[in-house]
Image (cartoon, rainbow, N blue to C red; front, side, top):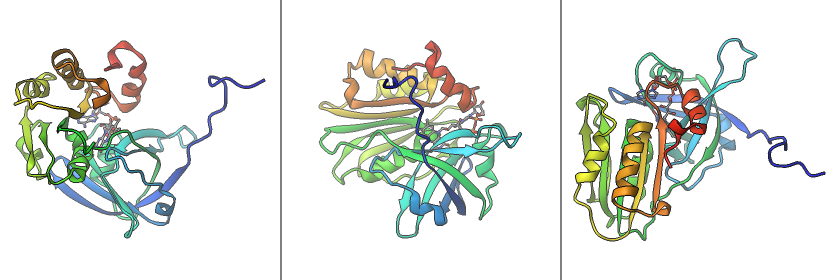
Length: 258
Ligand SMILES: Cc1cc2nc3c(=O)[nH]c(=O)nc-3n(C[C@H](O)[C@H](O)[C@H](O)COP(=O)(O)OP(=O)(O)OC[C@H]3O[C@@H](n4cnc5c(N)ncnc54)[C@H](O)[C@@H]3O)c2cc1C
């Protein structure tokens, strides 16, 4: 009897072990960790600009299952045999943020993936990007992959001026930083709602804090009536939740965006 998809044993995804080659503070709130080493040979790159990996952290007791955290692969350098991950440093809470803030050269890091779901469509009339610092790696990678004549807008919400950093983009794609120290979940949506909306086919990439993405959902679908197929929208994290809780809540009404 064939096993149903519910009962079939899952094939474990392969994991690879890399090591920290260097670190760089990109801003007060973002640290780049460059990873490489012998394990890089097993990294199967993907074309999507939002490609992401699951980083596995071991927590005490040692025999317990590793805890995973999801991060965008900002850049792959196949010649150097390295990949960059840009971590938001968001305080002392959590595993990944504090790990990155004090990562030392030579430290090992185990990861699975990559997966990915979005690439800029060169046929779109214009591009809209919206997110917070956690989505900056994916937005920056997409901006760099756009053709030189691309047009659009990018809105990035941060909670202080010292989080702002220069991003490369085509001349026709303006990057606007939305500084909101109050963490108002409506702030990003309000700016997108009021922006100079171009005509024609828009492709959207919107990712970041979950409640902020729910507010954007209303703007993009209820108010602008966009086609779901043209919109990449999801929460990357949720305020007050660890990633474990955030992922578990995707099965509950509060965790659902689309
Ligand atoms: C596909 C995908 C790609 C992602 N790419 C990136 C990336 O490239 N860079 C990146 O930094 N993050 C990225 N994230 C978000 C990242 O996975 C979460 O922020 C994760 O919760 C961080 O883990 P942690 O161990 O540092 O904190 P956790 O243990 O998960 O959480 C501890 C506390 O910190 C808070 N917290 C978590 N993240 C943030 C944040 N960004 N700002 C403020 N408070 C926070 C939580 O709400 C919680 O209260 C991505 C998420 C997804 C799903």
